[in-house]
Length: 330
Image 1 (cartoon, rainbow, N blue to C red):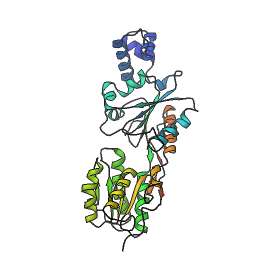
Image 2 (image 1 turned 30 degrees about the vertical axis):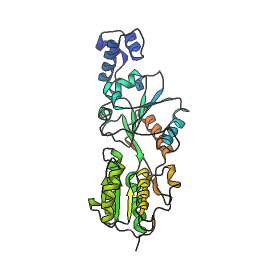
Image 3 (image 1 turned 60 degrees about the horizontal axis):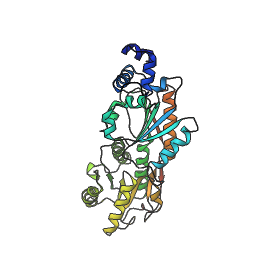
Image 4 (image 1 turned 180 degrees about the vertical axis):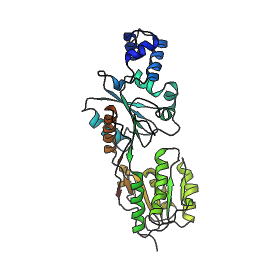
């Protein structure tokens, strides 16, 4: 593990100059500061290796809303802060975009801003930092994203395989034998996992598993205009959706088409957003406890900061049976 002395020796400057550069002192030039940061990253130095210093955690948010209680990320952020702040950490919530990621590397950003570790919400598979996290040294926990073979990272989320099995098992018990699936775009790790888990659940329960029974797209309009009609033409009696917002949109569209929910078609969502208790009819869904996800992310970060290389932390899923699912039509 690199020390300040190692950085100083590499650049032939004093330890004091390195320390000032790392802490953003105004009397260090931008050129030298950048050289110090790049060398620190190259040598594997990180804030977490310091015995003293600010205990700041960065919570990066991208492709996700978290301002209102009804937003998916709200409870996750709340849960994280509920355990991090009493433990003596300052939590800084930072909106993340591609421009930031292209302007500076992840490790350099963390050093520059005095963060010891990070929790990522909403990273996509195309994000530059997701690739950098494969070799980074700064502890990072990612919601619904898995980094292989880097002991400085951990994946937290709900057990998607368990969730899809619960949904399919419930529908089979209700007499459904032909079940379809609608998903958001497969450019995210979690959507890929749920897509695969759905077909695994079909095979486990000896149900038809032809891939024509699934459709995915980044745009709801494509799911409604292209993939939903294709499923209905195949006489599906139930549809599982990759998340609640899509399930709600499908439910409304089907009702506008004259289909009764659940008498003609059962619909199941995933996540258990607050809206599920207020849809018409109320929505059957797979619940992931987002407050506990946030807390789990901090526990995982604590392990990484203590040099315990935890890889994956999954919460159990829970089936919330409401009124959008019922017996298969005769």
